[in-house]
Image (cartoon, rainbow, N blue to C red; front, side):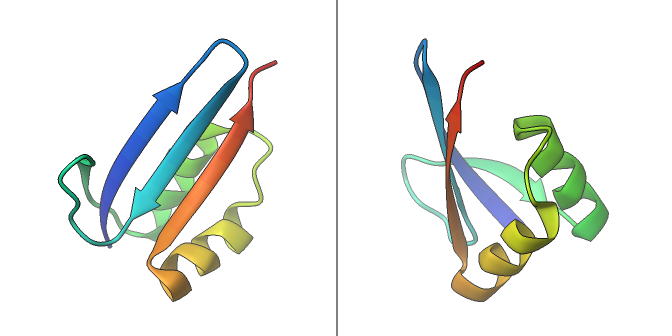
Length: 70
């Protein structure tokens, strides 16, 4: 699955937008298989529900994550 990412960070939170279609303000991550995608999501947040978010990304073609800094 080809993935493009937009990553906005602040002191308190991080907004990560993943998309399966090319966008001008997104950066191309690569063509990730399921294992690489799992690893990538776990790098973003250790306690993320990987299976649920992978299904959402595959179904809708995009995924927006709001990650609170600890």
